[in-house]
Amino acid sequence: MPKQRALTAPAPLPQIDSALAATLFGSVPQTMNAAGNYKLMGIVAANNDADSIAIVSVDDKPARALRMGVEVQSGVRIKEIHASYIVLCVGSDERRIALPEAGLHVAPLVH
Image (cartoon, rainbow, N blue to C red; front, side, top):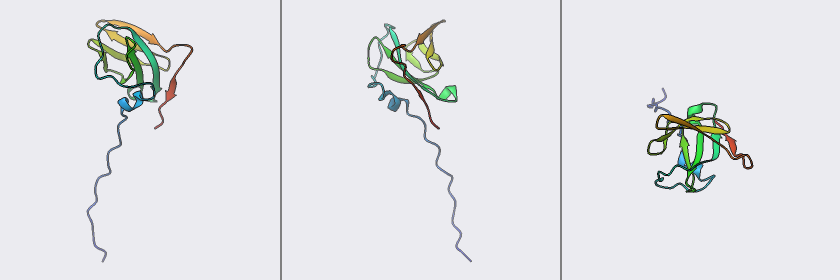
C-alpha cells in the first residue's frame, strides 16, 4: 500500500502592489503635501472597480499609484476610478479629475 502524505492548502493569490504600478509613471513619494493641485497621470483599469489603480500626482510631485478609497493626501480620498477620470472626495465636496487628452494612459489590468 502506498505511503500517505499530508496535503497542504494552496498558496493565496498574490495581491496587486500599487506601488509597483507607480513605477510605470514615475517614482513613489513617501508623503504628499496638502496644497491640492491634482493631476491624473494614468489609470490601470480592472474588471472589478476595487482592483483599478489611479496614478495621481499632487503639486507636480512624483506620481503615486492608488486604489479606490485610499487617501491621496490628508482629507482627500479617491471615491471612484473610471476609464478616463477619477472622482476625489475633498471633505464633503467631490472633484472630478480627468486624464489629459493628449497623453491618454489607460491600461487594462489582466487577471
